[in-house]
Length: 171
Image (cartoon, rainbow, N blue to C red):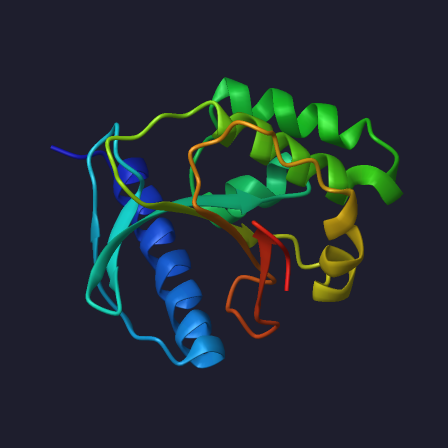
């Protein structure tokens, strides 16, 4: 039986995947359909990209503990809490870049039972704009070893600001 926090985590991951899929379809005119949740050792969500299976690992970009708790609707793990506290000690002008690099470093260490995995990072901080995300893309440090075929940024919670490809090359 799933706890309410596990159910909420799945709901938020599905929501992020749906927003990303709509934006991807709108941008590239390639259908993405039928999402479902996966068990651990697999990426969070699976779908079909033009009838070919694709797995999506979902991450959220936060600016503070409070923001993360509000978006997630639950208590944070110790690892997440420590990372966010460290982020708050960083100069405000560098927080966005540090948060992105922290997510990329953490996710690069994961291994999945999957042939194709894309990482989707959804910006959950309403103070960070698409423009700021794009201005920082060339400064982001994608680890040389990671399991992702592509890495995408979703500019805001509802997708109004669109998507940007971070890896292999941002567009």
